[in-house]
Image 1: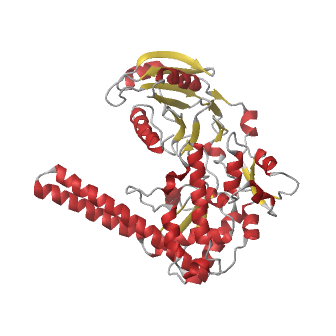
Image 2: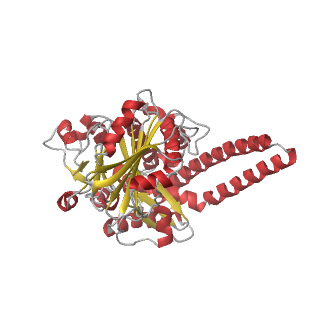
Image 3: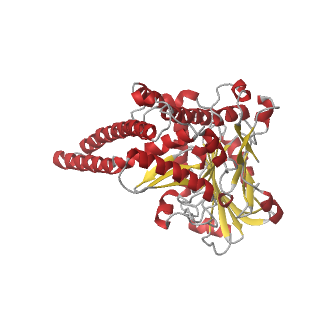
Length: 471
């Protein structure tokens, strides 16, 4: 599956969703139906999402961050927190540096955590975000001035395009600068300099695994692109290779790191629902459905996206907005353009309606369907799109998948638990046996190797402790 093709198809899906019942992040199945303890100020949480509910892990990450700040004598006050997100990421806003659970899962020790924190501190200290904002404003002002002076919108667009490319190059330069600053920060804090390179390798391996899951070439993330705001991993590694601090000796503190992340969730939070193979199950809203078996299912911030290898798409979400009267009448009278072939049906014992999106300029030759379902006090909906050569068959599969929607019993919902990372000894088990314990339908060994920064299965057997994911 080509990521650019996915983006194009999602754009089409977004156009379809504009006419469907709308949902804000706070209403979505993928945005907490019931928040956990508030550990971040509300304005910060609105920007970055909730913190992970583990005081011990939060305290550990903050200690590491404060150690880096103190050793580097950085000005200002900073707070360091773990976000309750399974994707590997780190970012910062003034005064705060965040790492996600997903990033912690793929790192091997405290030194690599310090490197991730140091990179984000570099951005803050250098005020990179503010600099980018000024460059962006100057670029837009120049484009408007060019269009006004020349009287040509085309000239304005040309200036804007050139400015956008320059802004992207500028952003890439800032990323390399943050890497170099981070390297200096962590060595001053007593960590091994090689942790900065190791961090980049971890992120590269995770990106390659994600590409493999999606059927992409593993090196897709290594290809330099003029449109990218981040340098390719190879560029980052080359920029670090000649720096003296890159080989500086220092601490790794793997034992302390492993103790801190042992038992950490590597899943979505229960308030956002769980992806289990091609199925999605939400214990809080007590609902479930199953996508076609060869689809990749992603739990996003505003809903659930299922992507087929032929570009077919399914998007699911729920809203607390009320729909008075019959759903088929609402679809007939409120959706624009008015769907065709509208039918009142039952799905999972609940009232539902289905209609076809008229083909037009926004859908081209694609097949598109709406399915809406009344689920308790919520309205849940599917937007279905297929534009491949077998679209008639695919749209039928997607409609059948939407018909798999059902309510979970209280017992089923209570039995759902997030996957967790465990630190175990590989002694007494073969690498294949260890991989078989991973609760995934595909690429179990690949996932285990990336999780442990291992090149081959034999590397796992030589270690005293490894990371594994268990239900």
